[in-house]
Amino acid sequence: MVVNRLQNSLEELKSILEQYPEKDGEEYLRFCDNQILRINPEIKIRWARIYGSRWAHLLGNFDDIALKPLRIKLNNNYGILIDNSNSLPPADLQQLIAILKECFEDGPLSGTRDS
Image (cartoon, rainbow, N blue to C red):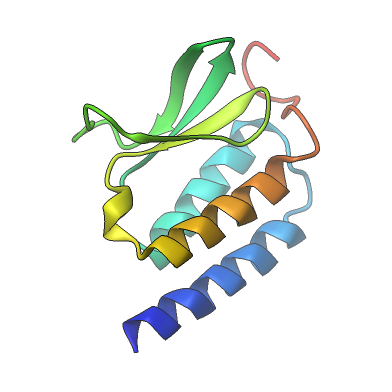
């Protein structure tokens, strides 16, 4: 029952993110973060700007940072770190990653700092 609800929520997330008018700037990152937390409030996610091998945190969970978070590169400029990736069933985690990569595949978000 919970798995089906989360699966439906991920499909809804994909639809909502696809309809967002302008996929640029930190406003879009905040929107994505809020939508993910709406469907799964327990997830501890951070957004990062990628500079080569260095990941600079932009926003997200800064309270309980894991020593070895799951790092997911969304494109050449942005990634996410999930501190408690084991809180999601593996199939749902993979679906969430696929949704975010699809949203960010068009390249850099022009309105963020240092872009």
